[in-house]
Length: 217
Image (tube, rainbow, N blue to C red; front, side, top):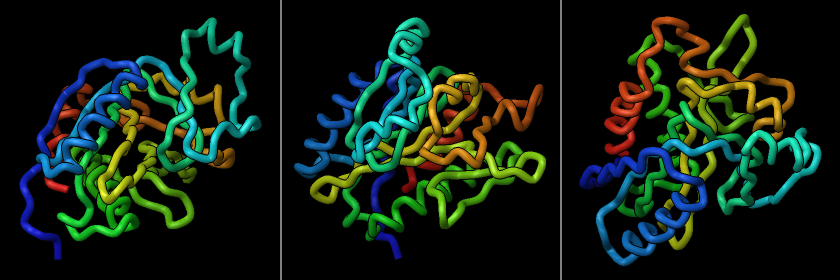
């Protein structure tokens, strides 16, 4: 059973470069580690490809450096878990900064909780989503093919979490052609907009629903 804990303080960072948001996470990590209130950053990033702790896997980056520069896509080697992914406008990125022990979470249980909160958020908009034991993240089926709608990559340092989730709402999915998303070539990537079409809610509406869900981690 989870302890009674205060809701995460939600901070909307708006549109912010990945490196700047990463710096905000590190500052918040130190605050929470010292006993401060848990926080939840919600942000959209300008186009950026990020790699996890295992580093750059050359075959997972399909685009050349000149091509990325021409398209204005940054590349960052992060310290989160997972492989390669893309962040960009129309994608909601959420970074919870909390003490796992306060919530009686193991790392695995925490990741599962993130996945479930995303599934519950998507259910509010009529999207049926699920998890896969063989592939971290949240998936939905289109034409009987699994497609990832939300990527997850976290880090736990001294018992406090960093990084988090990236939910595709109105993301330009063509950017994912520049990489092998999460190192998985046999599955596709989708978004709320692709699934729902003209009935897609606004990014602001999804942001509010997602923040409400994740604030109760």
